[in-house]
Every structure is written in structure tokens, then in C-alpha cells.
Picture 1: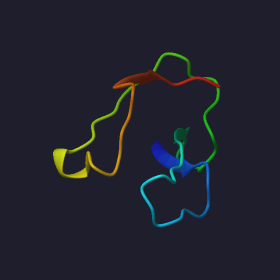
Picture 2: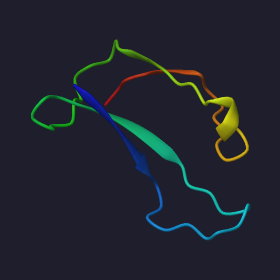
Picture 3: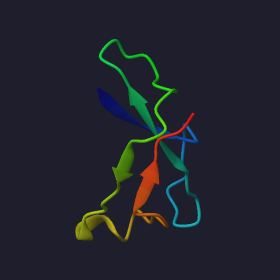
Length: 65
């Protein structure tokens, strides 16, 4: 299993007003997207040294679709 972080934008401007949404994709050992798991919980942690760059409104998410 692996998790990929996927950005909603491929390019970002170097300014504080530009941002991109990040989605987490769960993949199997063959790199196929797992879409049948609806019970796995993901715990997201942003390390303190990155809180000025990254904000996240949910600390836990359920894998779905």
C-alpha cells in the first residue's frame, strides 16, 4: 500500500495568496488506485515547522471513492 499526495494545481505562483488543494490517494502494491475501501482512517499531521506553509482543516479523514 502507498499514499500519494496529489495537488489540484500543477504550478503555483510564489506568493502567499496562491494555494493548491491536496488530495490523498491510497494505492495498492501494483500502483492501482484503491476505490473500494471505505473504512480506513487517515490521520494527518502537519509538523510545526511547516504550519506557516500548510494548513489543513481536518485532522482525520476516511478513505472513500
